[in-house]
Length: 215
Image 1 (tube, rainbow, N blue to C red):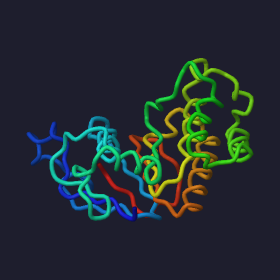
Image 2 (image 1 turned 90 degrees about the vertical axis):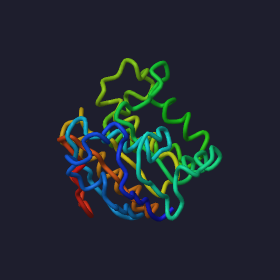
Image 3 (image 1 turned 90 degrees about the horizontal axis):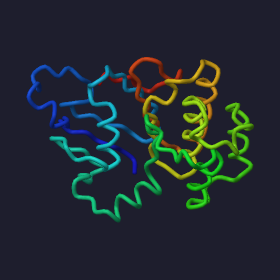
């Protein structure tokens, strides 16, 4: 996939205040291209997480159109979404969606054992760089949210992707770990020639963004 295109898309819940929408994303024709690094800045309640859910096919309560290359996503079948989530789309969800009863290492490997995309050496190096090497055997439910964010980020990199979305990825991280996470994310995305879309309601990764959009 080379491009994600939004054409006058808008969450259904916003329909009654359509005339008040002042956004670079909603009710616009917007192209997100492979290889770009994009920051989407948003106020709380403007549909940031909804946008991620639409693009990942988890919700369809929007008007307008969202296309992958030239294909309307509403025409995709379940088997198409399975393939896209395996090969083209990765995400670090705001709520992380980790398994609290599993260890940090198990949460990462449960995905990598399916994709066989990263080596254990590479995964170990990311744990080291992010300062959580000593937490590999700790259950996620006993880790801080900031530690969990780092685990979820590593997991999101354990697959091939054309686009990776990071929904408020550093909300609970200090500047040092935020910088390291940004460097790792950007390095892996560049290795794959992928697009990076970061969302934020305030604190965001300090990356060299191709464009910055207001939601």
